[in-house]
Length: 466
Ligand SMILES: Cc1cc2nc3c(=O)[nH]c(=O)nc-3n(C[C@H](O)[C@H](O)[C@H](O)COP(=O)(O)OP(=O)(O)OC[C@H]3O[C@@H](n4cnc5c(N)ncnc54)[C@H](O)[C@@H]3O)c2cc1C
Ligand SMILES: *[C@@H]1O[C@H](CO)[C@@H](O)[C@H](O)[C@H]1NC(C)=O
Image 1 (cartoon, rainbow, N blue to C red):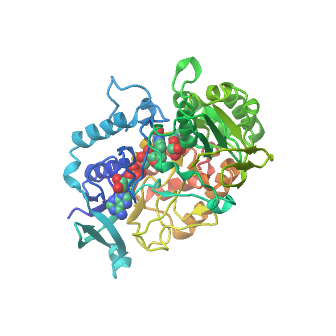
Image 2: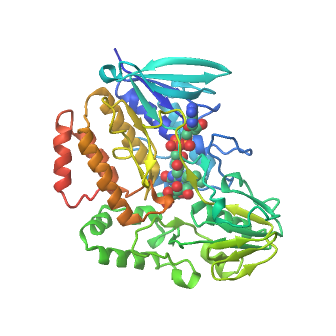
Image 3: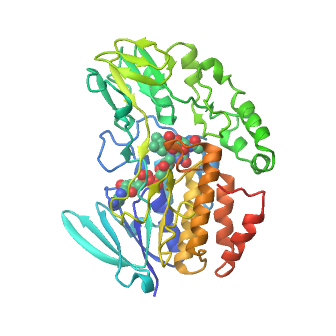
């Protein structure tokens, strides 16, 4: 009998998981809390609890050439970088082409995912869902957690003394939809991620003044790279990945700095990352440097305090008459429907084997898909994750022992910190081509052999795998 798989969420991770289940002859059921597919990429005017929320102008930061699924190129007439509505259209064509909608139960929220009493022999799960006020429970042989990680806002208000006195408006970036209503205002954006810089640039066209406050600075790349090619098709070649892996670290960081500073010298713009020895993820923004040159966006250091109307910064400068503060301070994640011990974030690391499998389970029948932040597009990454997970469920691939997996989690995390740093926003950061290679090599080797392959992988110094 075909194994039953519960897929939680019908964003991109859920959709590709459904397809992989079908490809492997598994029997999937997808539970999606909302009324439609697309997850984060389905823009809505209102902000909903428990669901990612984006601003109207979001455009992909990874090119269509590097972001499509392996067997389903994006339509010829799609531009290289996609507006969120276009990307959603791609997911719709994908879902239609592989006939995935019939597996999805919409407006159904997963409340609990529990191990069955006989889990150690059956590996089965009880999944409790809620739909229209009615609770239901069903048994599944495996579970794919695809619920996304841009849902719970991270808003460290305790680091902003005086915020309780501040009389202007303040909110998390997930509340931001469009620049209307911010005309003539003086706005402070906190953070320098992709959302922070997008929002600062967009608002600076309407506002009286925008300030962007950054503790650590960031590399900024344009989507347009050498000879006008999309940045990721130039940056993520096999050759440059190989160079980054074989050259000594000092040379790699030097090359990285040269590459990042080719467009403009970050120091002159106040954006130079504090620790330039880290290969921290660059943000993608085509307009930020010019908005800074025009004075429409001013770069400020960390905020040390707020008063009723003003902001005080680390360099002791004060900006008066601030009307609005936007906290583009990222997200934290949680899986309220899982037993707490299954997916843990402690000591600044995620307790999952290769960001997917809880190592302590007697049976590898649960996988997280998309709980990751690769240096490149997430779409091919989640595809490979889903292909591997479904093969593990089917019994074509096996996982190593708990001890080996724990060791891998610890070493991988040390390497991650060494490369990308300890900041909260970097917990899910991975390399791109290396991680994809690693997943792909798990898939190629069938059953018993996959473990043997893992040890070959360790000896191969060209695959550093983070
Ligand atoms: C502003 C922004 C821009 C980005 N741009 C890019 C980009 O250009 N390129 C890139 O590669 N990545 C980008 N990302 C990363 C992003 O994480 C991925 O693009 C991708 O959308 C993640 O998809 P997902 O399916 O994992 O999660 P989501 O899209 O969040 O989907 C999760 C789904 O699960 C459902 N769900 C959640 N909990 C439950 C429950 N308990 N029961 C039932 N259903 C549930 C939700 O309703 C939702 O539909 C961006 C992220 C943000 C925030
Ligand atoms: C694209 O932007 C999102 C949202 O800020 C971020 O999570 C992701 O890591 C970015 N991707 C790349 C390759 O920079």
